[in-house]
Structure formats: structure tokens, C-alpha cells
Image (cartoon, rainbow, N blue to C red):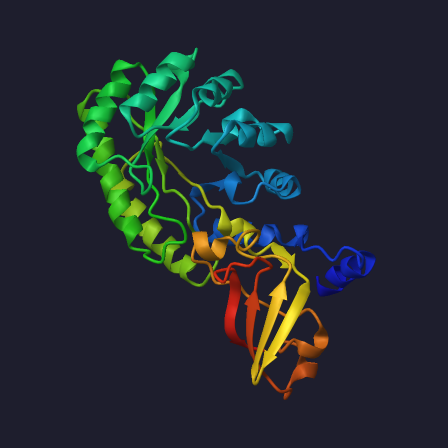
Length: 333
């Protein structure tokens, strides 16, 4: 990978703009890990996480389904030849034109968490009796437990077929046991729908936010145990999830150029050509911790040739005049 990145840098010495490298050969690694840990949970890759068409094409070739949040995302996935029944329109607050488009191309599985959204789907979906709908119990867009019955009744009145329940415990969550509570709450909603005389629901969506770190195995264990406990005797259940970063974060590498530097005693300060107002916005928006690795072999501590070399405190700033635009602060390099 590093040799390939150096070849790109050498071929573009005049521009020296930041760029991403996608390792297509590594795409299967997170998929294999997911399949081993959660074999009964179908992943719907969250397109909003990284909509690179080459990456999406590789995911599609692996048989992945897709979580789309807009008309543009649906169009991207359909352009790859993916069948519309492999797409979920997972946005509880949609533009009416997007609802109409999704229905026209056969994307019939979507989400709602308000009566207003039910009305929009009823008016804009010309095939309302065949449309799928889910009732999210998640975080930013959510239905409170006491609102679930009202929403189910409203969907029933609108002749929308509620096929399941969805929740999202939060992006990059570190609380594995939150899934336990959410799955139990989903089971309560399933039972409520049955009491209302609705068709038996068949979809449980456990959302996204999964991280490809050591905690994933613990999370998978908790999820499997909770599903078995709450839905072990439930026949015909399909469990899906909407992972994004789990698949995307390990296959993309960002290369940036050092555009300025300053030395203050033992502290080395560098300005790079990308920052929080660009590719590194995840530092602010998602509390991400980025890993910085000098590409030059002479300064890369992971290179055996650098063993014993002197180290310095390193701070890395983005290119803007905003002091908040900081990628790393006092890292040993």
C-alpha cells in the first residue's frame, strides 16, 4: 500500500493534493469478520458513510444490501445493477419527491417515526398496500415507547404494511449492552402490533454504528444472546443491520501533504493539506481518533529500520486559520 501511495505522490509532484487510496483487496476482510460473528444478521451497508462507487461496487459484488438515506443514494446503488429489493430507504424524515421516486423504482422498505411521515407515504406512494414500513426506536430520529401504539394504529389506518421494528443505539457506540435493552423494547413493539391485529411483523433492524475494533466481538455476542432470548421462538424473523464504518474505515487510507512546519524545543508542529473542514470532519462530528503515520520510512516507528531513532512530540494542524482545525495533538513520533 505504501509503495502504491508513493508512486501516486511521485506522479503528481506539481499538485500535491490530498487523496484517498481504496484497497479493494481488503474489502472482503470486514465482510468475512461480520459473517463469522453475526451469521444470521444481514448487513445493509450505510451508503452515507462512504459513497465511493468503486467501493459500493465491490460491496455489491459480495452480495451486500444497502441502506440509502436519499434519492441520490438510491440512484447510485441502482446504477450498479443492484435490485431494489436489496435497498432500504432508512430515513425517517424524507422529502415527498424522494418518497415518490423510491416507490416508482420499487424500493418499498422504508422507515417512519411520526404521523406526518405516515401521511406523506400514504399520499405519495401509489402502491401503498404493498409498501413496507418500520417504526424506529433509535436515537436522533426516534419514537418514544409511549408513542409506538399510536404510530402503529396510524399506519394501520393508512393501510401501510408495518413489517418490523428498527432502532439505532448511536454511531460508534461503546455500550454493547444497549443492544440488549433495545432488542427487548423491539420485542414489546412486536407484541403490541399482534395485539392490534396487525400482520405478524418479520423484520428486526438493529441499526448501525458498529466499529471494527476488538469490542465488535463482544457486541456480536450480546446481540446474538439478546435475539435468542427475545425472539428465539419467533418463526420467520429476518434480522438486518445498517453498518457503515465497520466496512469502510479499514479499506480507505488518506494521504496528505505537509505544507508548513514549526519547531518549538521538543515540539514539532506540522500543517497538512486536509483537516476537519475536509476529510477529517469525523474528529469533530464523530469524536473520531485518527491514526497518523509518516509515509517516509525514515520517520515511521513501525518500520524496523527506525528502531532506536529519536522521538518528538508532534502536533498536526489542518490547513485553515481555525485553531480548532487540529488532527493530532502532542503525539510521540
